[in-house]
Length: 131
Image 1 (cartoon, rainbow, N blue to C red):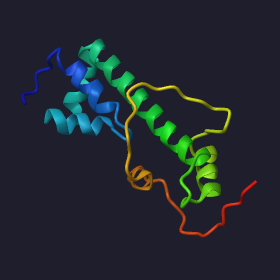
Image 2 (image 1 turned 180 degrees about the vertical axis):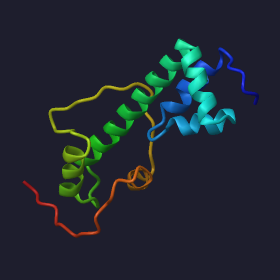
Image 3 (image 1 turned 135 degrees about the vertical axis):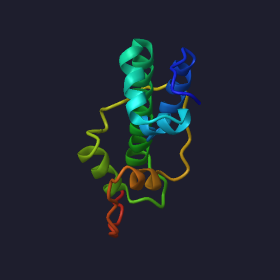
């Protein structure tokens, strides 16, 4: 791709960034441009900037929904206390926090996502406590 901005990039940028953990770097890779070019496009086109901001927000909401569901409705083989602590301390998500999102996205391995984001996952065994 060239370095000229095209109006149809708005929708493409939004779709790319609505995935959990997507970043502006993903846009640079998709459009085959440098970060400087991306910044230029954002400053020249308010609609492109808005698509990026909206897409990043949707992607973050999807990630929060995944973390919330793991922390408060975990699979049997997960460490509930650790996930609850992570959701609360790192993301500020508690049981009262409910986020509504559109276009549900399935993630096969949330721990891999957390590793990619640089969130440490301690290797400790804490038994789940049933109430």
